[in-house]
Amino acid sequence: MSTVKTAKAATTPSANGVKQIEEAVAVHKEAIESVVNAGSAAFKGYEDILQFNRDNVDALVKSGGIVARGMQDLSRSFVSLTQESIDESVAAGKALFGAKTFKEVMDLSTSMAKSNFDKLVAEGTRFGQLSAKLAEEAFAPLNGRIDAAVQQFTRPML
Image (cartoon, rainbow, N blue to C red):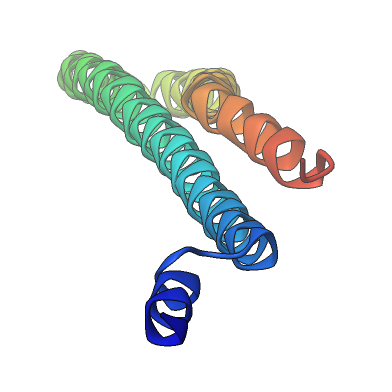
């Protein structure tokens, strides 16, 4: 009979053993929940990084489009200015060949030089303003992303 009691005692878990198993299960459950929560937070962080990078690419594409259109406008203006200059040079050449006196040639030359200089200054200023405006417009989307990056990386980590 003593063998039956010993076998029975060995097969029935004690209260202390059950408590240890429950504690082990609770610890492992907490560890698994921590891993799942960390993975979820990492995935959310990954999604945030992907969206941040998508926004950066969108800003680059938008900026590139602005630069392309601006360069087309500048090129058209330059071609137009060149054509006007050629037309004026042809007209000036005809006027010089039609001059009757040396004084008339000098007056025409002086007038053309002054006109060309004034046009050079005016068009140079205009091209400078157009270029500055283009740079400002092209950098606007990028400046927005720089501001977003500063906000993103200076906020406290949660």
